[in-house]
Image (tube, rainbow, N blue to C red; front, top):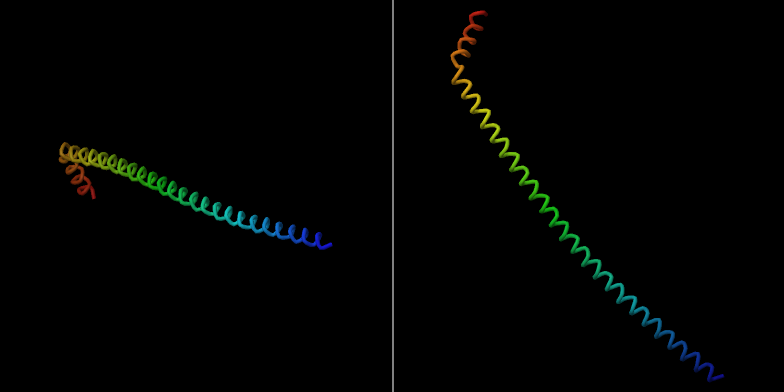
Amino acid sequence: MERIADKLSEIEITARAIVENAEEQKHLLEKEMQEKRNQFDTQMEQKTEEKLQSIQKELEENMEQLLNRQEQQNRKEIEFLKKDFKEHHTDYAKEVLHRIIEI
């Protein structure tokens, strides 16, 4: 009977060791998974930041191009108006005078 009790005691000690080892392995795996999650989060943050910077740069370049085109168009319009006024200012003055006289 004592032998059975000794065997049961050995089995219980072995079972405890297995459970403790499993708990330790579980804890190590949890720690490893957390490290991998942290690493993944860091990589995603970096990629997101790089993408945002790329988009921001592209938007700035597009805005600069748009502003340059608008500036060129404005210059052309101003030059056209100056040229038109220079060529037709007498006609415009006559038209203004004519309208004033009509009133």
